[in-house]
Length: 249
Ligand code: MF3
Ligand code: CO
Image (cartoon, rainbow, N blue to C red; front, top):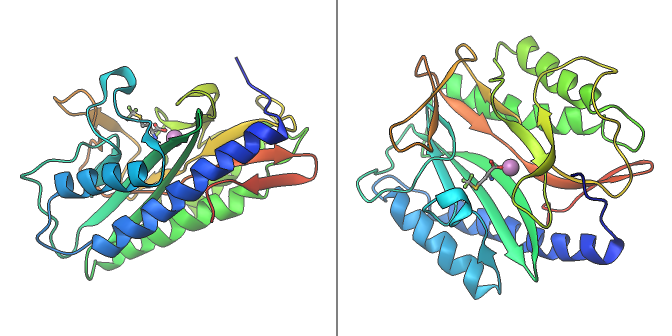
């Protein structure tokens, strides 16, 4: 089911989005070689709770962590571990779901650990840009395929690939709501957006080919060819004349 949210509800999602954004900034300030991904997950949990929120990923379909932390070839749904230690040259993605007063916001960012190579710089920069560019297609009465096509077009123009199995989604009352929003597609196709829909838009791009694998932990999705992946995500509300980002500040 696709929910249409009232302004009161949208304000609640925006409050969750504010804590979400602060949590990204806090975690980014902790990044340095030598710390574990479990430490970052613990800090995220404490941060969200001390701001009156709940880490909404925890327990979702049995997911064990506060947030998703994915390194290098891990695309999404990575698990913080004591024995996974950041090192110079890694890239790290935080995918955070914050719930406040019953409403959820979802946002992801990818960061360098110290100095990273040109390939990873290129990947991070253009994944972030892909989201910014494709967001321009979001407005009431537009088919969602316009957004999807724009992400794919932008990615391919910059030599990056789009995994087909993962994408954006509705969000608000639940972690994952309809519709599923692919990061590839055709202009003019797909569901028609309506004012008041709240959607998490999340290009996950890779430098190699688009094929993915899932690790033995049954959660972590990685590139099959071991190439690195970056991920930027905002939760937005669809408006008549465009959209508003709910995880931006
Ligand atoms: N933010 C993740 C997504 O949109 C979901 C985290 S909950 C998890 O896919 F349990 F799936 F990890
Ligand atoms: Co999401």
